[in-house]
Amino acid sequence: MKTIKKYIQRITLLAGIMMMLQNCVVYKSQDFTIEDASKTNAKVKLVNDNIETLKFKRVGITNGSYYGITKENGLINKIEIDTTKIKTIKIQDKTLSTVINVSIPVIVIGGFIIYSVDQVTNHLFE
Image (tube, rainbow, N blue to C red; front, side):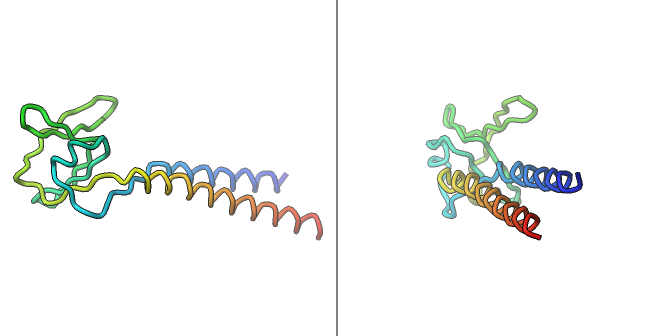
């Protein structure tokens, strides 16, 4: 019974770690213009002159004004962006984000399986 409880605790820890890693977003290292950000349908991280970091689901343009789209409590908000106060703009690297979100859990699960098999075989042959 202690062995089962030990494995359940490990599986719970593994599941918790995997859930935390599922929301990892990687941004491209180079800076982009606001026009580039509005043309992509990717997440955008913007730093303004006040060293304030703003994260948007995407950036759009309406009547010459740029706005960032956020989602809070299920509501979609449009926040106007003052283009004169922008310091840097980063766009999400979708490929690298996907690779990291898939590979890290696969590595963790693989390590867990190898460790579990090793523990079971050691326990059987003692």
